[in-house]
Image 1 (cartoon, helix red, strand yellow):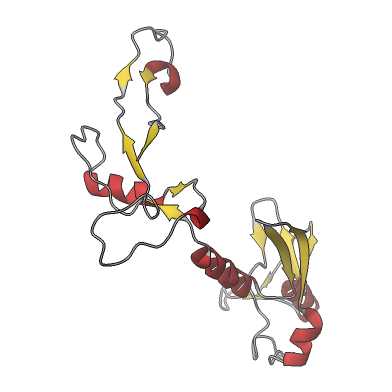
Image 2: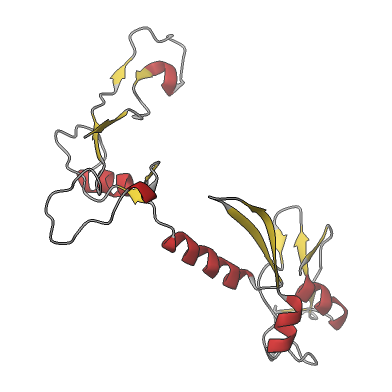
Length: 197
């Protein structure tokens, strides 16, 4: 487990005339390996350095028993629809892989087909359709079924149909000295979806 330290680790340069490569004294190796440093301009030592051969004198070969001893999962919150947990003693890259797998496997509703008519905005139709497809729809996927690949048309048990009709216009009552888009334009956010069966 990484602990935090509010100081800098200064790496010492070799003598002038030699390479500009930075070398860390052995006393700082433990800090580099085990601590995340919160500096004034950023965070240091967030990458993994415990692989074999990285530091002389350290045996960093992977050991299953050592992993079992150090790894644990703490459940922070659990209810019918939500599970929040902490993975302790695991590399950040592995924890991120678990996060991505969980995101990919949780069913969500999103726009698959976008039919665009009379788009007069500066955003091209393809870009607009792609961005709409990235917006998750707040709907319970358990109330729907997966669509049969043979079906051309959607039904109410496998499809949500949304219609977006918005026109962004200049607000005639906007204050003359205003620079806020909320005051200058009407419908500038475009958040007017209407569900259609």
